[in-house]
Length: 397
Image (cartoon, rainbow, N blue to C red):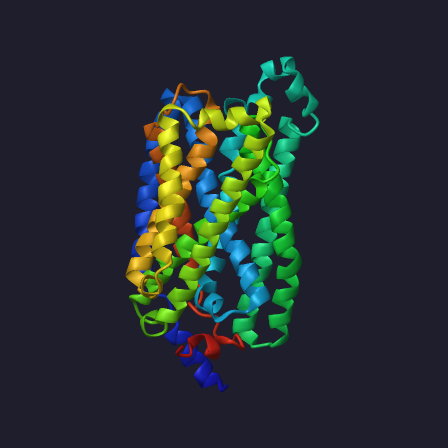
């Protein structure tokens, strides 16, 4: 490949100009959401922290799921991954900002987690877990999780950028060497994080499948998001002529697989707890099977699993970018509903008590996150220009 050809190739894959407009919209919505959330904090600080946790976990799930998928791509080397690798890498590079946004959770620990409150000293079961569930250990673990995830995101992005600049074929293998242990470490740390950030909201409850449920949910969030972004980019130059129906078919099949795995884990967890019939376990489900929470459970069954499952069975739908993006948007909305369903019943409200802060916090964090994401996406060509498998990825089906 000649130097002149390199330069023309780089230029041809430059991000579309209107990414800047999206970034500005992100900052605007972020500022409005943050301002409204701060007003809510002044009025109802406890509710603010409850809402903030769910919103932060939602956007963190997209970034971490993107990290997992990009590592999976490096290990499998499918053409599907090359087309969206820069989108995934840009999402992973927001992890340092999400680590900073973790600070309010540390500041509101007592408002969020029962085990962090002084009265926890009177609960024998919580005291048995005090060596693990205490503010110092919680803070140190959280910092460690986020630092390690950000490190892997940095390494893979850095190697990918070096590949663009040098074309060194050895970098292909180095990315695989980083991704192999990285994927295993991500799963291990995400399992612990699911205990810390969600399961410990009800420190009397326990599920051995919860970590897997948490990880699959993050993967599904990232897949839905990358489909939405892939459709957006496929409607603009330079990617308009490069994305083919078979690429979206691959993304649709992956999303169908994750929807099925999510449902399988959810049903398996329910059946195991139902069969054991232990008081400290069934109470968690009893809260979610009465009153308005029962209807939220039904909504999740219908719109997080059944409807996406039935729609994604269609080959024609998976190859239609616009229709697939609508399913992806539905899945993204249901991912937030799922996180809310996991967390909110443990906050001690009487029944379903959806609050306007649940909306403003997700908009505030989401606007900031999306502005940072689009800023990262603008910084590099939309395709890894010197990856040895790029021609294969761009080939017609």
